[in-house]
Length: 241
Ligand code: ZN
Image 1 (cartoon, rainbow, N blue to C red):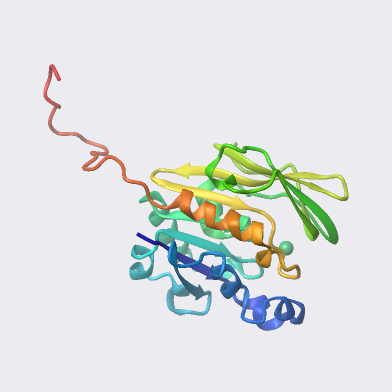
Image 2 (spheres, rainbow, N blue to C red; image 1 turned 180 degrees about the vertical axis):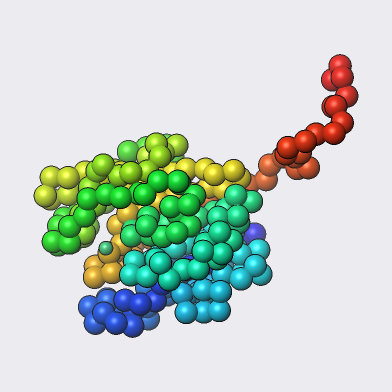
């Protein structure tokens, strides 16, 4: 069965930044959706300005993996919608946070830290090293991917220690960054991928598309225990079993 991906695109740079429009004439959301080809994936794109930011209960219930690209308007996301996304992740929905979405409300609430880092927009070469070649998100990739121009994100990154660090980036200016990291929160799997500044064609890069597709396949809900009792358990399990 195909994996249902919902791309959440903030949609502001697509409207207001001519450089972004030149790189992504159909919008960043459409470029991201193209990273998840049929028949393995079905995609939909929703935006900040949609009712409920496009994240109604029905949409989230029909979503296996939510991909989030936001930058200029994190505070415009309503608290109750952010909490709705967090609950969906806790219930098993996968969540892929891209680039500056480390400062989006759902990601910060899921991780519990301020997620700050160093940054510099100066057209720097970035070499994304595969740090965990056995991880499914690295499937089919070369040992390193070079982006000729990118925004520098540098350590330290104030996130909880990841369960897996799949990619580490080196930058021309000398900094390094854990650019692809995994966490779990309750039943949900979370992947953060840092490349993707809006004035560079990073989401057109074939290996970046491969990373995102791999990440969605990894983050899709997994089956697990059912009928789990939290809090008060009124009856003792049968003894002797
Ligand atoms: Zn940026």
